[in-house]
Image (cartoon, rainbow, N blue to C red):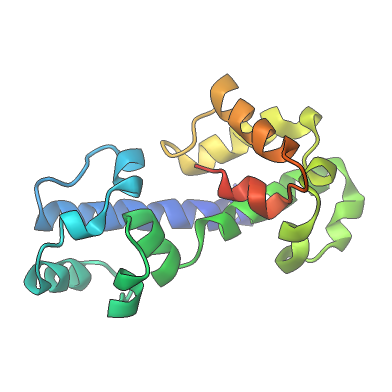
Length: 169
């Protein structure tokens, strides 16, 4: 397992922890992680006591602004921990550099602005899909449908690695 994969798995692990904490607070919490990612936190955290209980369980501090600036648990984690697309871009870069070493000259923090078609050609999408599935299961599943969605995001006019990453999950 590479450091890039661990970086992405760390985000998914925090989402699982968030889900576990939420299940202890409200029994209407989605059990499917992909559905929980999209579940609206205001529908479960109905009052300040429930919110405090949830926050006391979750190891990453969450402030009121982070709750206000997000509607789903996935967005909340993006605000309080780090953005999912940042971790996805790190893995995309690792796969891209394996196939084109010249892309390694682009620093990690600027890789999101690289043209998606240049960095992520069709020939590497299956491999990228496998890596993402291994790191993000069950949010991203390997297979034709997931790779097709990724291919569609890359094919959009002016698509960047960042915009392709935002299409996941």
